[in-house]
Length: 211
Image 1 (tube, rainbow, N blue to C red):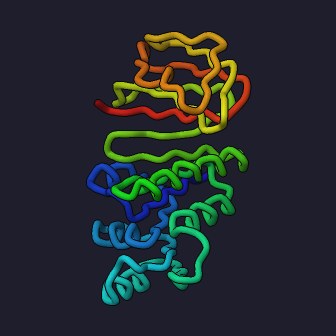
Image 2: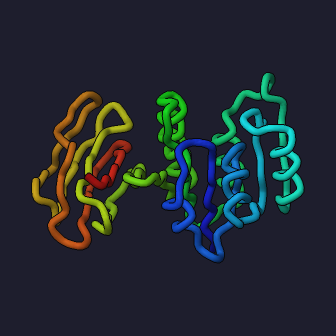
């Protein structure tokens, strides 16, 4: 099975290019498609309303993509990123990674984090990555790797998350409940290369960050 990497139009940089693997399916969402092409990667598919590129840039995207899907920017109901994410879910990949999904528009950033909930419903592991953070949503016991990240924060995406037990972290929790608005799960630290997060019910945001 193959990972789908969606490159969308938020904050991007060399860090994003370093995450691309040879067998990834590359999806360019709006200006994210231009970023790929300008850095020597041809999208397998580009989609969106392309309201953030020039006429010349749009022609380049169309010519450089294996498949191209555009839509009316006024009458569409979904963001460009959600369109790409829905397409990716339909391909039943092994994983979906969103890059460029965080940026200066907090409304778009938050909406993109909420997209991860769809991955849970489809049983597909999904994550958002930027230069400093790796974000995922879990609903079952999950192992997390420390990697380059200094902190791990846990925040409920549902009204509450119950039965949270942590293994391998500096600040332990045992059968804890987190409710919306609580900051108890912020800035924990993995003591080992890998830790385990257990939970009984709810949807839990796991945010790994570099300081």
